[in-house]
Image (cartoon, rainbow, N blue to C red; front, side):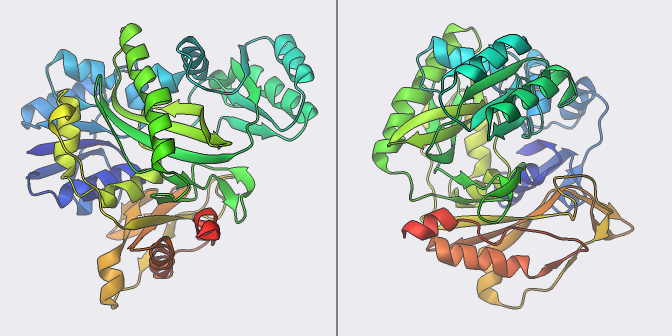
Length: 425
C-alpha cells in the first residue's frame, strides 16, 4: 500500500513513524513534511489541493491521511472524494465542528450534548451583559475560528474577560477568527483528551490522554499548543468511558448524520470531568498534538488498517487492539515559545547506548528543517520525546532520559509532565 500523510508537524511525523513500521505500507509520502519526515519517506511539495490530488493519482497512492485542521476546513477531503481518491478525514461541512466554535456550541445545544453555559455573539454589548451576569470567575472567552490552538482565554476577572472580548471582536487578537466569540462558564474539574476514529456511523474510542497546555511547570503561564501528554490516564474508568460513548460520541455521530454531514475521521473531544460527569469543552476534527505522538505507539493494530477501514466506511469489520503499556511525551520548545519567534538552532542528538532506552523511547520531530545535512530547530514546538513503560513513572523517566540526549540552543521544556496521574498512584 502507498500512503500519503498531509501535514508537517509532530503529529504527522508520528503517524508516519507508525506507518513506516507497518508491513502493509510499501511507499510513504509526506506533503509537505518537515526536515525529519524525509527519514521516513518522501517529502512532496504542492501548490494546491488539486495539484496534490494529481500527484496521488499519478503515483497510484492508495490512501491519503490528513493531519492538520486547516486543509480539512478548506475542503481537501471533498476534492479528493469527488475524484474517488481514498482519503481519511472529515468533509468541510463536518469539519465545521472545529472550524467554527459557534457552530460547535450550537450543535452541542441542539443535540443535548453536555457542555458549559455560553453565549455566542459578535456584539460587544451582549458579551458584556453576559459577563456581568455571571456569578463567578474565571470566565472563558473563545475566538470563533481557527487559531492554532491558541484562541482560548481563561480570564481571571470580569474586566479581563471584557478586555479579551474587545480585543477579539475588534480584530486585534486573532484577526478574522475572532470577529465572533463564545463566552462561557468556567468548569472546575480535570481536563481530558479523548479521540474517536469514526467512519460516519461506527467508531473506535482510543485510550484517554491528558495534555498539558500551559508553558510552565504546575500549569503556570500562558496556554500553548501543548507541552506534553500521557496515555492512558488512570483518571478514566470504564464508567466514564461509557458515559462519553453514550452521551457524547453516539449523539454526535447521529446529529452529524441529521445535519447532512456524517462525521468521518478523528473526533477529538476536549472533556472536562466535573463530579464524575463528562462535559464537552470543544471538538477538534483531527488528532491533538502532542497526544497523537503518544497514542500512535500504543496501537498494536496496524495503523494502515485502522485509517483505511475508517476511510472506506468499514470500521465495523475491524478489531483494534492496544498495548498494555503507558506512553509519556515531553515537548521540547524553542527559546521564545509561545511569546514569539526564535533563532534557528542546530539540533544534536547524542547516540543512545542504553538498550532499554533505545527500545522504549523515540523522538517525534515537529518544527524542524534540514539545512546542508543538519537538522535545525526552526519552529515553536521543535520535537517530542516519547517514552514507553509498564507504569506511567517508567514511561515518564524514559521520556526525560531521551530529552537529556537532545541539545539545541534555547531549548525549553516542562519537568512535570504526567504529574496529576503520578499524584494519585
